[in-house]
Amino acid sequence: QMQMQMQIGGHITEKKREEVKVTIPVYGDANPSVAEDGSERESTSAIEAENNIRVEKENELKRLEQKAGDIRRKMMEEKEKEKFAMEGHTKREQERAEQARIEIEELRRKKEEEEAAAAAAAAAARRTPQQLLEILIQESSQKSQKAVLSVVSLRQERAVMMEKRILTEKQERLASQQISQAEKHQIEAAEMEDFELADQLAAVIEEHQKEQEEKSQILENIDGLIENLDYRKLDVGKGVWTCFTDGQSKLKDFLQELEG
Image: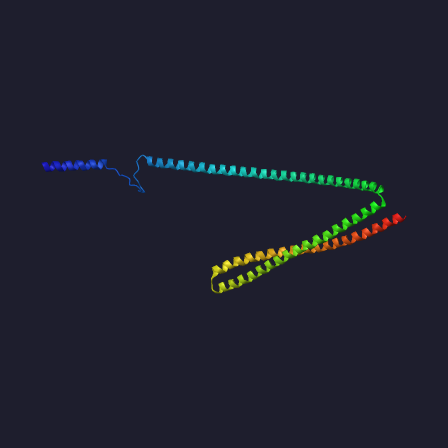
């Protein structure tokens, strides 16, 4: 009887276990148990809807930010255009003002020269022949000294240009020699299959080539300046000769006036 009771009790206990048995979902299980009423599917749909709403809001925010950026860029472009227009207007105004100033200054200078010439003529009419002769000699001397000083100044300037030319020419030759040496080392590096060194030497060669081109351009500019100085020297030399001839001519006219 006791054995039968134990069997009946074990059967009842086993039956209760089956009634209360549930499947406990394990973390990471791909197919967790779901309720028969579909509550799990409803929860998943709600999450997907929230995700879709969040993505739409993020996309809308990005569109708004892009639109705001386009507006700001357009406003900056408009400001730049206005700035350029204003600068152009201001520059034209400044050019007109400068031109007006130059014209006024030229008129003032001409007026002063005319007044000075008139005053000199009036004073000359009251001078004695001795005073006129002294003034003539003084003017001729001043013009001659000025012309001679111009010649000396041009000679000094040309000497400075020649020194610069010699120095620049040496620098150009040095750059050319450095290019030749670097090219020789580059060939040797390539033959030894040291391509890293060959690339480094290529950069060195390029740098020296730029330096050589720069010095060549400077030499051309210096040659042009020297040529210009030579032309000016000829003009100044003619000016010196003209000072002496003009002085002689004025002195001759003055003596003729005294004899007359």
